Image (cartoon, rainbow, N blue to C red; front, top):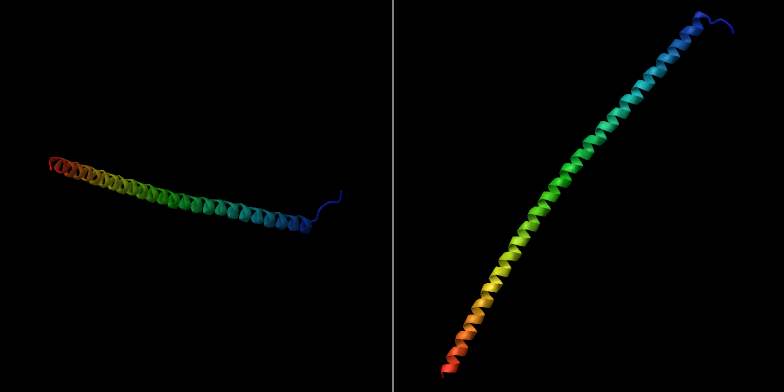
Length: 94
């Protein structure tokens, strides 16, 4: 094997340094991309949770509203039945 000259060793060292620098930059970019993805996914999860909370609140409000409507309908039905019963009683007396 031929002996290396100082120039060969210097060129190889420069090439190795450039490769290390490239690899470091690639690793740094990869980490940054992962961090950015994690941040984005976290924000999306928070948004989804907010939407879910809103939907639950809306559903509870809708159920409450439906319950109130049902209560009012039952009350009116009771009034109607009482009125009819009263009318029938009056008609029977005549």
